[in-house]
Length: 383
Ligand code: SAH
Image (cartoon, rainbow, N blue to C red; front, side, top):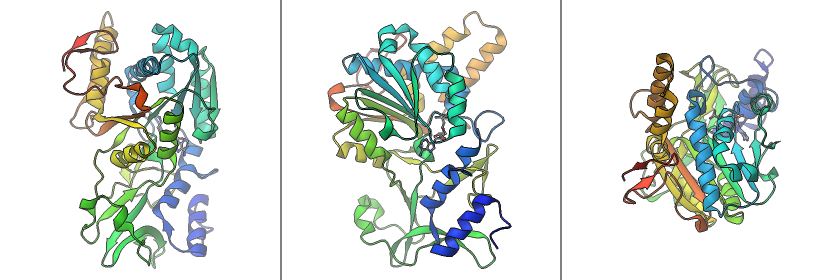
């Protein structure tokens, strides 16, 4: 009986009963963005009391530096008179709010921009509208990137790609099979694999992975978004900045995970009530965009990226003349965003940009041997 389950689980069970075991990617799509019961559709999961905390929610410094990165990128684009500043998956709207405030110091950029928020969740769109209500830049909302009008474009996305559905394949004796979710004999949802192997799957894998051991898992995103981003930045002479956690080189491994109330949870239990993510494969993302003619910048780890943009200078400025409590808060946010240890995001998170090759070098992605360069806040550093 599926009727005894909460509505989303009942629907998943109905679909499995009717059509057979469900690929992980389809399960993830339903859990996160089912139009009525999806995780992002029904709630605001962010913040200290929520399920997880993202970089823009930790400190205003994050969004401010992203805003300045956008202004510098706009200059590299030749400072077009009109530019679309697009954010994919903007959550509470905090990053955009901090970004547009920070670019007050670049008035021509501010004058040129129209903000486009791409958000699938009506609840979060509401939240973003409230956040941006006071700003004087024009803002529009869309459900997908292809609704954003053509023309010069800068795209930013923090912790967006990891929320896009992943497929998984499991290595079996006779090759790679798609990983699926079935209803087990004891009635619970369980992982399994499709009966038939995926034809020619080996050929699509990076060479070192072709001889993976039995039981190995490989993940890939079939989502069109990487291609769409690559196409847009080349066609519109723009750039896209993606920050997320993941690996720089494609590798085998199961990174499909659930988080609720800041703790790991079972991804197959209570579908739609916990966040589901999988690491971003930056190599695959880069290859897809490169195939369309885009240049790849990075990935570099988040600590390096934010330091090159000047996060330490910004932290000092925020602390100047502030009460002690505020200083401690800034210090702890700085550590959280850049530390490579413990719960620090410095190393696990990476920044990567894809851009029209005409743009040349972009801030934060300077080659390590580029020598003395100024950061976006105007002071000098070496290397
Ligand atoms: N960038 C924000 C939120 C990250 S969570 C931050 O850093 O705080 C992921 C965001 O992407 C949420 O806003 C979610 O509703 C949105 N989202 C998830 N899948 C989406 C899709 N397919 N299209 C558009 N937005 C999506």
